[in-house]
Length: 96
Image (cartoon, rainbow, N blue to C red):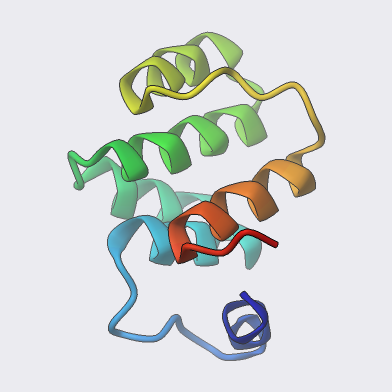
């Protein structure tokens, strides 16, 4: 997780990242549109989870709810930062 967070200092995500992790990376950099495009083009449950997060960031809770259901995840109630960290940890296989 530390290496992933440290990579946010770079200009682009590592090319080997999955689409959900790349989308989450762009979200952290403040590029909502790029993040959304990446996860919108991926049909995985992981991408749906990031997609839900992005719509929560946007303030579109109805759309976020749809994507949480697609991801099989409960709708987040904590802070956006806490959710970002939780998604990143889950996608990276980290328990911390």
